[in-house]
Length: 569
Image (cartoon, rainbow, N blue to C red; front, side, top):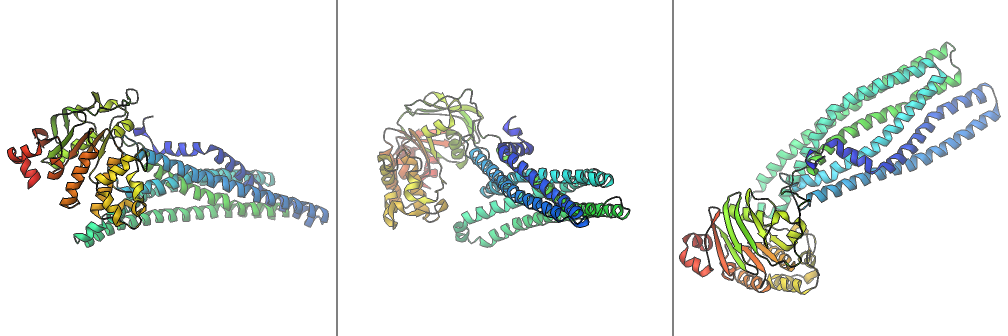
């Protein structure tokens, strides 16, 4: 089965199958527990018949002792059965979360397209929890079935009409409960979608809180979140009403069924067809059956919600890859990468038949008069998208023929809006470096101007950085992100506007630092910064999706009007 065709039921099946040992153990122990629970009314009935009706004190003590042993077994089976069920539930949810994270971080990408980060977090938490809970629901369902079966067998031995009533009535009741769960399943899926959307919008707004305050857009942001949150609330209330309606109707049906069992048992006792102890057993069993029948209602609700969540998880796991995955033809990047880049006939997005050769060790600036050209170029170089036609080659080999993980270690594309992570400043700089304290890290910190940031922080490199780097200013975040890219010491490095949030003096220092630290290695800087372009070996102008001019920064400033407009305006 292809991942893109992954159905929700397959996700459920894999979750259960992965925990089959705990599910089986929990089911066996729960079956024992339900069997013991069903036998308690029988033992009480026998104790009444032999110890009370017949006046046999020894028999009464014997059966009371047997009851005590049964209760010890009930305690043991319930405790360890519940433990196995909970372990299966949380472990299944954990494995699903891991699988989702692996898919989201897969080099081929594509799983996060069209989804806000908060939505994905909701899928990886709440939806994974609900699917994991299906394992516990199955254990409870097996236990409830066992309780009903044992109760029916006992009732058959007490009275054939009572036993047949339970055996024939229970399947009909379960079928009705299943039908009642369908509206809940549909509304639960909508509830989770709206809740995930609200979480995603909230996370998005919190991440951009400073920007919103800076432009005075707080009210618009609040109004947007209120609309999304109101939709989520409406969906949640509808799902809650569906669940309450289902529970209410199931309780009514269950109560009516049990009342019928008690009525039939009472009439049989009144006619003398069953004794006092058997009547007590019958009534107690009828009361006992409330538990298994109520559990079926809970099981159906959990399965309905689990199916809805499994479908959402399947959408993420089965999302199309952003780039082609060809394991049969994938090659490895050579141990020694020269760094020759070649774009031949490249068409993607706004790019049209783009041809460009970059020699090993060359430093090239790229100026795009249209930002869409820069975006398209970066996506192709980082192989976050495959071109519609043409190809990108590294040392004579097409990127599509190379292992993605190895390719991105050799050809690093540092995006303009790269986020920082929670941890220390050093953790962020050395996140992908070979060593936390090696020469590349030290050189990267100096070249990017991060050393100035270090001197302003109380704990230097050990200073704490909050999630997404919000504890730092925009310029500080940008310098740390640049240091992280430089510290990797990749054979080919592509930088996108690495110095837009710093002052002119710092920008000039960064330009010189990047030139020095990347000397002898292929470097592409996609930017309109004069300081950065001035230190490159040559500059390429992209206009209308094609290369329209090439030369040094000084030559293009004097000879190319489009370049002057893009760089100096």
